[in-house]
Image (cartoon, rainbow, N blue to C red):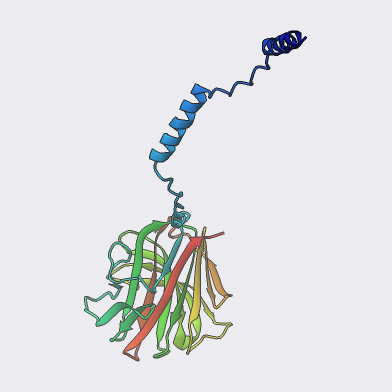
Length: 267
């Protein structure tokens, strides 16, 4: 009996040892390609240069638009120098006799200043580049020393400065005159085309604004915004130089100071 019990126990243990055991879940194997890629990315990141933030490109300085043909905007202020033959002619005295008048033309205190030390001096400076025949000219000038003086603007001057139209204010007469000038040693160089008394105030202690317009055969003079006189003349149909002028009479020395000269095509 005892022997049979022992045999049964041994048989049971053997059967238990022969029962199949569950297979353990294998550990995941690392993907070699992924591992290499990760290593390369890490290496490249380590050796890559530090990114530099983009710098802002400064905006280009604005450039002045070219002026339309037949336009001159000349301010006799900061940056303007005289004499400057490339921009303005030397002074021209139209006296018929060969007399060296005593005068100066200087750039000072935001003006182109004429100082005339002798009577009967007729002085001009020209912008030596050809302008169209039809132009409107404007200047502003001071004349506070004496009213025995005249100021003017000029158009259609030929390159030899022997012919031009002139728009002049005669202070001691309180009048406006349009002249045709033609250089000569034998007769009066100035032919009066039009004359009119001023219908507006002529300032003695501040700037007066003088305008001259050449348009076709019509010549028009305005002072301080009001038309004074107009005339038709066809002696000079072509374009030419523009300029400014100052004239002295008995009371000298005297000065005329021009602030600017603006020229635009006549509309």
